[in-house]
Length: 77
Image (cartoon, rainbow, N blue to C red):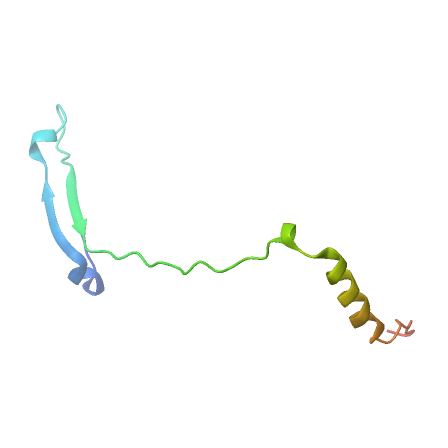
């Protein structure tokens, strides 16, 4: 087994299992144990669109859209 220098501190053990050698073969299973850590992510809250007050949302949306200028057509892009 080959292991790079930057990974050698992760190696716990590395051994062959001669009792599991196949018939008429020179191959041996190699069991390697590494010290690895698994990162965790915090669960982020998501929007629940089933619980929206749609009347209130639509009213607020209309108010915000009324503040915008109407769209204009520009020529000569």
